[in-house]
Image 1 (cartoon, rainbow, N blue to C red):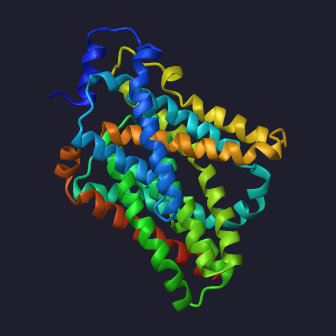
Image 2 (cartoon, one colour):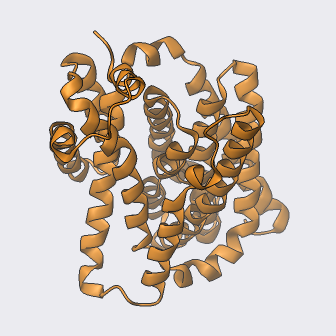
Length: 348
């Protein structure tokens, strides 16, 4: 039986027109229904979170029930277009003013840890023979903001669905370890509240895990870690632009006949900036901000559920333990470098 990805490739090869709404509806309903279950489970177990439940449930459904080609158009739409909408929706919850001061204070540490993450991903990835797109996904996820960063770069580098699922699962594993381990290590190292907040905000990936670890240490550490993390998350914008230009250059070098910088440019990132500017200007009524946050959260879960529904578990298993070892190495390098930079600049 052909996989969902193979069905999509066959449809493209056959020169079929873009799917209609009625053709997309079965897959969209499936992804949305599973996402709703994942969202509820995420509220019951926030340490795991809805996005992880979504991608896991999607993988389970994909590899047990094997949805047929009828569901392909909607699943593809949810995994691409809905994914971009979710990133734009996140912009309405991010005020650039509120993070500016803390962002400048933490920028030196953040830039060092980002550089270490990408260098470690490149070096260890070559050593472990992990292919380029999976290296980028794990590197970006560790350097910036976990699953959200992976979701943001996915439309640009266009990895296989199982690579995206593997990267998110790997990042989640080390998020869970960090939530349990960081507060203990912080007390053993006698870190200050601000020192621990800066460490957690620059070395833990997903925002939910940063918040959990920070407030487990102290309220002050949690407040500081959250703002550092939000500032760090904004750096996904220049990273996406760099990746888009690199992808465009690679296509042009390869002589791609359909090369177009306008087509490959991540326009959804610009709309994310517009949404953030609207939020910063105070044009988003306070009364609807919680609803916008819930909408953004749910759209991400729908998109990641669709990615799970497209993931081939056999291919993921064939990848072996190397991506997990890569994730461990990059995460350890980021964690240590954050502490070292704070030590050097006297912030510990």
